[in-house]
Length: 288
Image 1 (tube, rainbow, N blue to C red):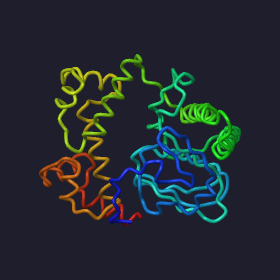
Image 2: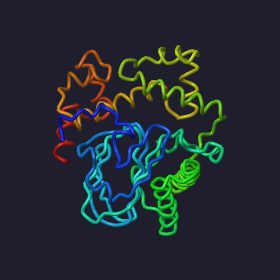
Image 3: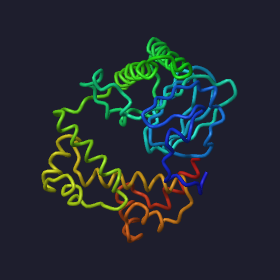
Image 4: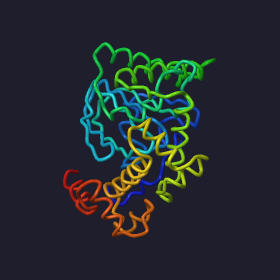
């Protein structure tokens, strides 16, 4: 639905049946959320894992529409725009969390950042579906009953669930030392905070206390792309979200993602995607 404010990041206390705060882990049954609290396209600042055990529906995530059927597992990452429509009788689980809720001691050598790279939807084997459902059922009970030690139990179960998700999606760890991975997280955090204002590699390098050349080389070594490309990709993704999910004029969108010249923004968009911003919006709306 065009015209909604998709720039807002909803926190955990704005969604769900039972209120949860940052640091909490919320586990609820999908049938309790057939009628979502936010019924229009929106985004979160937390991870949301949806495991479907029965029913039908549609789940839209960042310009793609997926059938919501039994056996499907969805991983909605922070910042992604999504919306679902569920039929009556749909069942499953919804688990919501921030990355810092995971037990790092259990996942020390696991590429947690790969959760961001997990596919939006996948279909595990029947055996693994059973295991994921087991963890989710236990989490729902712990979340609802709140017995002694429930917070620790939820963290343990969530970490096991996350580990299986990473295994299932064949997440590959970065070939880097812990310090390099930590550095990348710092760069990505800065980018998320400033991409709509700063497109210059020099700014990020200076903030990180290294030279632009050093930043470019470290990012290239870890991601196989330049720091400049990473910055541009983040701006482009945000522009696509505005074009798909709002009716803002293209000139306003260019300003929202840090381009002061709408004409330059349009040339940048076409060079990256092979179509103008207007063509992208028209094609998305027709497909929708």
